[in-house]
Image 1: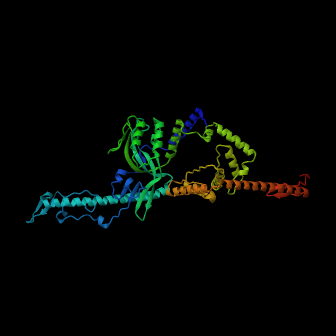
Image 2 (image 1 turned 45 degrees about the vertical axis):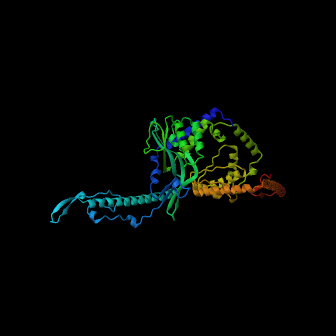
Image 3 (image 1 turned 90 degrees about the vertical axis):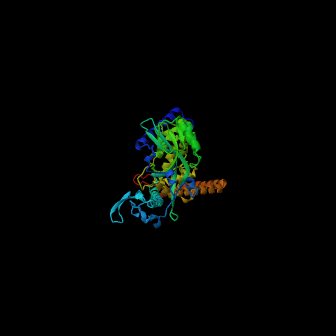
Length: 517
């Protein structure tokens, strides 16, 4: 389908308008510090009981945290020798306190007189204190680390519950390749965000005391929100680079991708593999830095989609559909021809005779089908409890019978679950649910794909065509018999001069006042 430049320009302007409108609704997030919570991998991997990437016990996991067991023995600090007990000047049962000792104190000599004694006067005391403080520091650091890991375990334990309740608005991600850039445009400001991200799912093994995180579906994304409002150079090459990296694992060596990306983004851009500081400069930099983050979805997903659409339209990578063209007030050759065919079919009564509604239906539902066949878009509105889900189930069944593909979206997961249960069991596995991207959703997807594969393997086209032909002949014969019966009943009613109903239809009514039929 050829689309002229005017339509392409109108489409790009249309989606740019939607993007601008979307930006007014929510703030563009360019700095990871605006995420709700961040955990840096360099910090986590130093903790005993935390495992990241290739160090995890399960190769499928990106992160593991094992619940530490803090015993009474762990809580007891090493006891100091008597020689230094009175000189210790801090609560040594508190692992968080700074060690200190008394530099001097008053003591009573053999003559009973008080004199000042310095801590350093006794070499045995000094060596005992040094030895004990070394043991105490080991104890304190061990206990602090265990408590920190236990606190971290509690955070992720609570996070699992939050994601179950707020999974539609929150996401837990693994981010890699920190892009830092003090952009020259003050409206953009400072950019500090991971370039590559992938969504993670948390799982609790309560019996083992392990919380793990793994990729939901293996899909990684190049973050686009931080570039909102920024003119990106070399967009064709960058888009190709993004497509290439999508086939690679996010945990593998991606230094070539980061280097290539930053050089395409800016002539002075650099990729830095090792650095203790992550500063934003006037030249964009990508640091080899990884993190886990909890962030809100909000309007970001829609914004990313709109930016990809705009980019695809400008480069010619996206072909505009008939529906989009009609929204723009234009007509495509395909749409005109399709509407002409649909109009001809409607005249012959083709649509009415080929409706496949497994559930109870009414004339309004049939009218929806007729309008869908004649238009690019149809809006059906109704308050709760008016049968919208029931209607959608019938429409889905009808379109599946015609070999069409149907995409159903919803702001929340629950309506989709209710809808799937409305679909007849015989075709329910043809509906592939993507609800939140969790493990349960993946299992349902695998089940649907398995059943579809089995059905295709058992498919006997010749038998199906024979059965369809037979059923159509029986239907035609049934309609002919019904028409003949109605005709005979009408003749009888006219002969007897009486009113006669057939399935609610008045076949004959004698008007006494006018003495006419």
